[in-house]
Image (tube, rainbow, N blue to C red; front, side):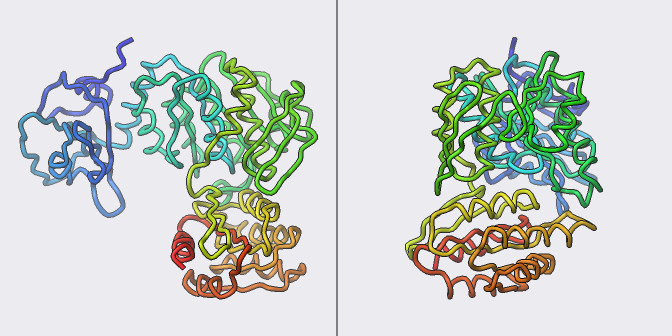
Length: 458
């Protein structure tokens, strides 16, 4: 099948209007940022909170774009530029979804979609490493997992033989749109926790939202689930419609990790029923689960077990997801400041506990989008801090004070609370010493990158 997309194709699927340009022009590379455009790219102008990117179409052309797809903007005078094209659409977000759907339809390849309350990005990374042992594979970069990022990933398909994508959501209906664009052949659900419970109201609604990924699953496709998650375990017991592959540590599953040995920065286990030794190059239970998901996918794609184990052993994490950096001063920073919810906080604190170091320091900020459950879930994090005997706890933000209060009540003596990142950073710089390990974690909008950058420059 012809995999190329033309201007005419885009106009047709988006119901857009070709203002000027060659309808037979081939559109191969797409960009949403005028500062990152390469020669021959097609620029897509998205509407943000403060501006409409379509207004920058001339700048895109100056940077080398061959064409632009923009919204209809009142009063915008579109200048004719020779050798270029401009397509106007009602909504560029809807348009990119339709273009990505068209692109996806041209590829008869394995498409693995990953969702879950926690662990999506790291699970995607390890699955990619395994699938790459057999196929030339494209994956979601970083966490581009939303209604813009995921279609942009699909538009990056060229001579690829497999695609591994991440799907995120905050509300009901969002995964439904994404999965009907991506049309996965394998859907992976890592867990159902409490992320976005403030928007969705209950874990049962979160399960409902995650299961929307199955709406786009191709005929004879497979669902890979963490069988130790209570809601997924219950769902698969009652499921009669889908081909389900289970993995786990505790509940009887098709792919199981037994005789696990946790080391400071790695783990090893025996895979059952294969009785194969699996080495995971990142410590913590969460990455045992991630590797089991990757093994499950690898087996479905008939990747030899030796290649699967090699893929797991050599996988690399996306940055800002447990990005571990040793500083010149001799202490270690675990940078996990992209996002936070109860499940990922728990996993990161357990990882901190397992990491080799003199003192374990947790720098934790507010977890957002938890609504009426916020106080309860922050307090639960405080209990996790205490259960893991963290030496020093520093919190930033009004909600995170609940972490501090409960941790202190449960025996953590050195607890410091701050209202802003600067004060927390100043305190950290005073107390950090050689061989200490500091975990830096909060919801993205807390901007904990400031703390990390300041420590690395210290």
